Picture (tube, helix red, strand yellow):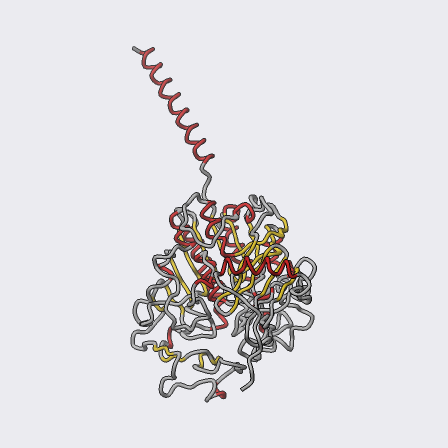
Length: 516
């Protein structure tokens, strides 16, 4: 009996060893999912980072992501303005397919449908916790917003488990933070009212009461005054809930740090949508004067510091090596965008667009060609990629990384490109939104004819509109100075045909309007 008992113990021990080995093999075959973070800047230009050639600004923390990851030289937002680009990023759909995907007022209804496929929904299905912290600007509610109750639908209804946002932009009302559909810190005895049509009786404005402002408006930003800054739109009430502009970067950083620390035990997808260097540029006093370029340069340095603190938190929590970081911007740069803040006067030798032509709002390259990097310590090998990539493709690529089926959109799977395993990116991309689109194909860009001003009277940026076709070879002419439409009619016709096939529209040379 004793011998039989010994045999039984040996058999049980062997079974446990086999099971243990099987478990180890399964764990080896199914590694822990990496956290995924999208850091999204607001109006950061192609030349605003030292890793992309800036010599007058030093951005060591952004550069770390670029230099220790993949720095893309042909990375694109889907548009040259913020709302359309954010729509493309989160839905995987070209913004020109949605007529509502345009720069929105703070009271606009949400333009992402609640039943629509989104990047956070894909990540939820893959088992991720999902969060957005920072700027939203995709609309909220259904058009009949009650800011004093539940602000819905919003991010929580399109795939984000957690959301802490500003509704639109820092220069638009309402100037409050929204925490999972509720205005943060709202006093119910001081309800908020918002209008983009008319002012509320007795409320001062930047236009009528310039003596109450601490920042002078240049164009459009002359409605309700909050913290001495005139805004776009009218707002009344909600005094206890109003943000402090100079603390905004620190405030969002604190929320990001808290989220990482409280969610680090399970894989998370975090959309960290920073507000810099969008107007009004309000650096914390710690950064005032640090760049020598005025508030715009100062807030870029502030954003770089925030990214450094963010990276430090990942390291301290022991999850940096298990976190994939995707860094980009919603559109290109602009200096004068509504306030007098010496951005133009103090820019000096700095070139926010680098060698590119145009800027924010433009169909030229600087409008939507932006800094774009992917980083994953120990997994992504450092390098530079010339592959044509777009933010629209993150949805399909991250779905592929997690073996999750995604509803078909314009998004394509370029996971190997984002991981640095391939240099084969897109063959073509239609960039832009309802006000204008252009085709990027290989080394070529074709801009179809458009009516409109060649240069914005407010920003001074070349908008890229012309009554005739424009054709540029970016490999030979990155600054788009030599229009080859007449010299290379075969290539022009080839790209026109491709553009019309994708857009489903016909184009033609336009004649000047006859004077009445």
